[in-house]
Length: 128
Image (cartoon, rainbow, N blue to C red; front, side, top):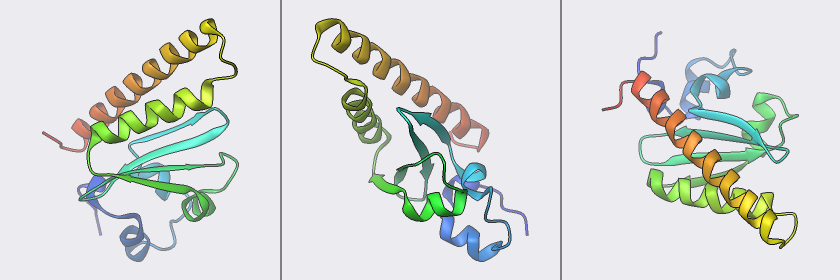
């Protein structure tokens, strides 16, 4: 059975369709998968929500899917704002002005790169 549009199929449904191929399932159906601040951030999308999964980068795919924090957003903008705030808080080591400025620039760049990557990946999956 061939799946055409992977960005709209929930993870649980994919496991029902193909339960023997659990290991690489998160990587195949994720729009974004990176490690930031020692934590793994994976962005996926179902029919109604943008889903951010946040957890340990050391876990296997199946364990990561079960134990990671799941954040749900109805719009891309809400997700990017939340991720920017999260990255800003995670990156701050002190309240020194130089540290705040550096962290702010870095978090903006990370979120902008993430948005461009998600858009590019979405166009590949047939978004208009």
